[in-house]
Image 1 (cartoon, helix red, strand yellow):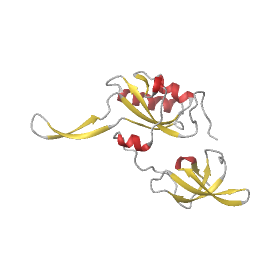
Image 2 (cartoon, rainbow, N blue to C red):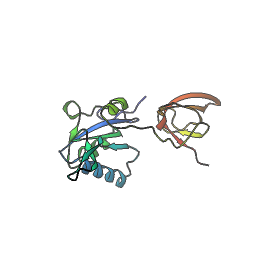
Image 3 (spheres, one colour):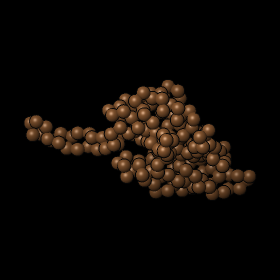
Image 4 (cartoon, helix red, strand yellow):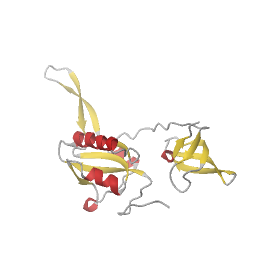
Length: 184
């Protein structure tokens, strides 16, 4: 069963949320949030912070081609985070943030597909482990169990782990961020 915050958010899964900012504050909000996450040791709650941009080729005054970075969605910052009361409070109170996108300022999580459609490259995750590696399950009902990675999905978002439960090897499908590599 998923743990929830006081506001009913799933506090076990990292999801994409959109924070609205004052015009021109996107980079400052991103930098301040990254600094706060580092200073408060909250990296486990914040996976990624993105400002959707595109690179355009424009001519300068001398007629030369110049690469220019253009914001696709001005005044918005995309944040992949685990929504807890603490993480909500951190984002909401950064100078320049006017609120989360959602009804009455209540954050609504978006899927990777929706984020990708907005021009944010969600990329292929670097997992830090591969098929055959021993891992410890870190999230969900099976947290603490040890297993071996049997399969990784093509999009690298799901994995199958052969977990040792009660003396038997059992295949378990998990989110790819639900395990940590066992160190010897």
